[in-house]
Image (cartoon, rainbow, N blue to C red; front, side):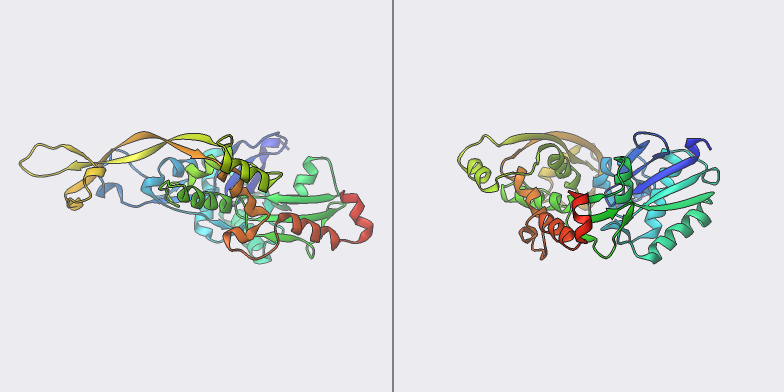
Length: 333
């Protein structure tokens, strides 16, 4: 069978990775997010027409005009209608395939309920008519990619972290550990930290911007106390992040008068019902990030920072190993 007839789709909380069997890298990686316009095109005066459903990267570009939702939460599908929109985008727009001519391998979360797996299989067969469907746990596939059958996999995603022990290709579900703190929570905590520094950041519209800051500037500290003291006493850790942000321009509509453009910054005391969104412009803004660079990722090891009870990642790994049979522990080191 041609490799392009076997599709691989990794459904992550933050991103969907899809491609074809035999390829070294995914053909497409896009955010697992669905957006709907806040105003219908007929009700707005923008020259850009918005679709009723926007999926993937387009949501980030139009985030100020969309009401966004995430179909997956903690690695498990919560909204099947939105998930179908994501799959439609992946199969027809990104991969450009005819599903009945293909088979598909879908990744699965270690603690995904059986009814969700059945529902996903039902969608693949009855809605998309794939010739064959296979489910594999993500952690097992990670070991396969390294040429291994046995190991301890720490799978850190956008919404959840799993610690999965695997022996001879078989996971131990009764020992699996899950922590509902991951990349998205680091981003959210970074928003809080930067807000304390004095930056006015919105948790919804500025989330993707802060995500970029996290990915480019944040790191894990080997000695938290020493680096924190260094950050307080010096500016050696401070990095500047420059980004573009959207400024809405309003179009004044008054009969009998010449039309003019008015910036929203001077319109707070005016009757905004007399205006309609007409255009947009971009301004450059800089954000200085200091100790926040390593404070945000620390929530992975100290969940109490965001008021979450439970073990951090290091403690979770230790407990997982301790619960394994002693004969299998050394194979993981």
